[in-house]
View (spheres, one colour):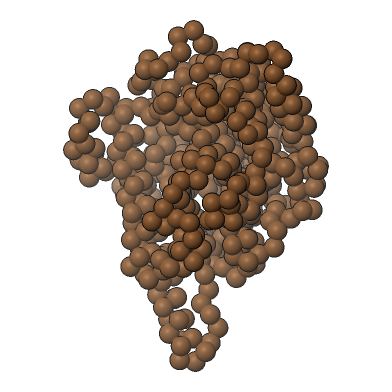
Length: 487
């Protein structure tokens, strides 16, 4: 009854860009993390001069904790979560890993390649507590989702006990109020490239009425989604059992669309991860809050929202000042401010129109693709962004597919999402003034983009786990350079 489904919520086409938006409040074209993702061997990350969401929440009096995937840089300690505003961190710092061994095989030299070509034999272990890599014996053999679930329960449990003690002290002595908590949980499951769920997850999938129709890939994805569902359930249960429900805001968002070749699909939406079609960017999202904060719950909200809006919204809810600051927004140009994060709390909680009018899906100058939405209309430039032309994914490509419409349009196309939400056919009226209006706005926003760090930052062979006892570590720190690399 106190949840709101966010039916027009968007993330970026891939995970590093979405995480950069969530941790900074800036559109990723202004962080340099808008093209592809960071590779493990690239000595880059979320720009160190940027203030982060947890830093602003700490300034507002919050404790902060991060659990799960980071993927915003680790070449130096300064890029790690505990140096970017989080009091504690438990999880992994690269982009993906095996669910059971927590190994990530990567490629090292030069610029990133398409298609991805990995360096043979380069495999490294990746699990951290704080800024310390953990030994294999501490995590190996336990599924990644279960590691995250266990830590989330522990963090919430500890916070609940501290909160109860502080409340008791307040009643008897009138001491200072308890310290609130910002907990960032970044689930590992599901993620393309790795399979293998616990037996209990497969058992739940196999008991589903439609299980007999699943391909093996579909079964794998479903089992990993079951892991995600249990993580959410454990999070909610821990909040309830800790007596924290009446003071907790829970926000759930996905970071990009599904990978079409993995057994997943965004059907009936067009596209998949890496693309700027609706299937690659329209994010599953909801918010739950107590009645005093969310008086209009138990409904859906169709206002336009972007993942970069949550930092401003959370900081505003915590009583902080404007974030990102007006000065930080203007630093990228007056035009850039229109696509920076916006505080949307009043709009969502009170069912008011969204303050967001323009939504830039992305602008990738390396590939030459992107999209901009204004109201019902969406302008798309080479929507597949260099990926194979699949409409919905591999397991249900035929149902409803427009036979005469190429998935990878050439140049710019205009879509009316009100009459064609699944992007089956572009608006072809050459006299439509909306196309020119959106083209001008898109080019104005594109002109504010900074260089794409994941393209311009070369791979560094000094990052190789072979030089660091089989681990991915902050290899530019002196202790690791002395131990494993003579430079």
